[in-house]
Length: 304
Image (cartoon, rainbow, N blue to C red; front, side):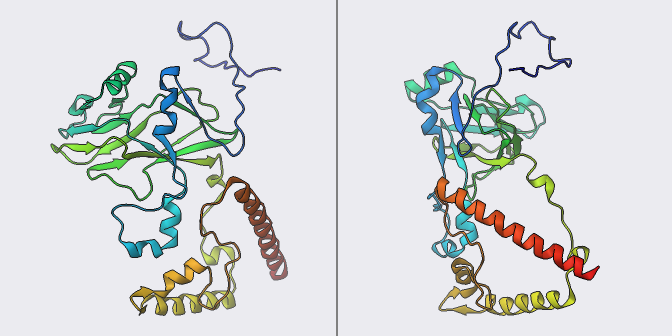
């Protein structure tokens, strides 16, 4: 097999590069994110630091009635969280220099102290109060799939704001960093060991690139169709404004999967599925998209 090698300025510009080639041949199954430790000492910790959110929709700060909101519940249990490996204390003076952020790790266990001796977990790459977590984990994804990195959904730590990133984890062959902005000046921000500190979610490369925002006028929706949607919004708005026994029926309507006229949603997700069921539903959803696209194209042909 012929391998692609760089011919740019990075190809031979450092003595640290090996003189031989190790091609990127590692195969990752289509339904898998693989965690590989950067050395054997960290392998036993992979399952402790990274966890799927599937089924973990509860948050200790959410009121009970919030769980009637299906969109919120669904967002709470997709993707994977990274938990803080140690207790962390952050103090930012408000300056832009890297040294203006002080990171303290109050380690009490010998095992944690040994881990810290093996790896520089925490630093500030960018300055301006940005805290950088450098976990000894290499994430690998199937070909053409990146990882979207951002704040854990519906978790928060007061005084912190997450930076988001999109990483080509099918191509990258080493760990990457998670970056979090401290937003309070001269106040100690405490992260407890085990707190959700980062979040990753698979993102098929170029998926979002194909979408563009258009108005109803841009896509040529008929006056009749617009009137129908205006009516739906009107009646739904009336229902949303009314409470029945202390519960907004509009929330229950979405949860069940019916619109204001009683029409069932064509493809409604109420829980995170198993990989096999998810693949089946995605194929079905693709057929549904093709059907509606053909219908839309046919309507345009009639107009012309």
